[in-house]
Amino acid sequence: MKYSNATNYALHTMIHLMLQRESTVGVQELAEMQHLSPTYLSKILTKLTKAGLIESTPGAKGGYKISRTKDEISFLDVIHAIEGDTNLFDCSIHHEGCLIENVMRQAEENMKEELASKLLIDIAKEAEAKRETGKLS
Amino acid sequence: MKYSNATNYALHTMIHLMLQRESTVGVQELAEMQHLSPTYLSKILTKLTKAGLIESTPGAKGGYKISRTKDEISFLDVIHAIEGDTNLFDCSIHHEGCLIENVMRQAEENMKEELASKLLIDIAKEAEAKRETGKLS
DNA sequence: GATATTAGAGACTCTTAATGTCTTTAATAT
DNA sequence: ATATTAAAGACATTAAGAGTCTCTAATATC
Image 1: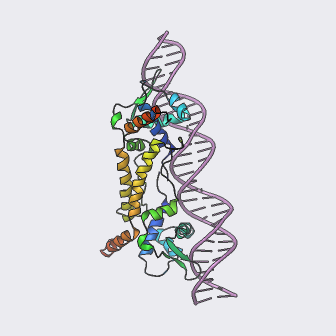
Image 2: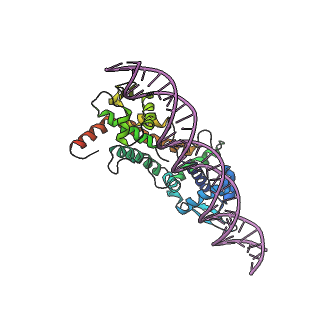
Image 3: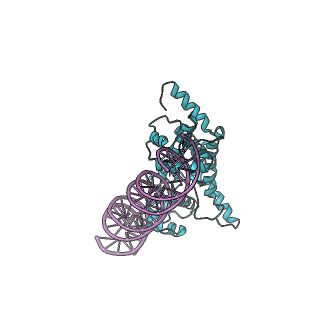
């Protein structure tokens, strides 16, 4: 019962791309930064690309950059891109209208609302400010 | 990224025990009801017992019954008993004060607050009422 | 056009956690 | 003493996540 590591890597990568000045960053560099193998991170980046959160250009001088919609990207967007559209809880006994499932779903909804209201850009700026005051993010 | 089936079984079992008039119910009966093997459900029940949510008596005429605190048992109590004290999200990169982790933890907290505020007894009563109006739970 | 570079796709392995079974032991009522 | 029931623990099975490797496709540069 945990979010996957991939979601963590994805979130950190997104923040990094947001703080990036250069137009594109290759998977090589992104992978090194997080001590991951490029091929593994590549799969994560592909998911982010398909979700429209980042843009990729193949070929020499290619790489990834944050999407134009960068000021509107929420935590939930990233989670959704990686984890897919899943619920934390499925009753699996009752096929519909399970009272227990209803309660669990409502609670999950509260969490998701919070995650939808949190924008990556705000955290990115916060991280930048923190870094400038000497503390490494 | 899902709550375990065990949590679902545990919640349903708790509701059932709350609606139970007879003093104790054996694992045999509880297992049949949910189409589970008795030994498997037994492990779940042991966790609930250790958490103090139900009480068990071994031997002939033994079985399980809901704890005396039954009016105060929340969804979160059951989840905690089965899943343990875990977080949905661990940064695993940064050792402390990760901004991303902070956001994720806060959102999770919202969910848990909701789950702590929902009492099983209310759902049990609702299920009972629903059953009496002809609809099976 | 040839070459170097980079993303993407897919098959594959490894590891871990959940799921579930089986057997034995301990406790209790009759 | 016996039947019944919970508890414990070893064990097997399954499913999902994590991660690697290889090959293909696209693009810039020369």
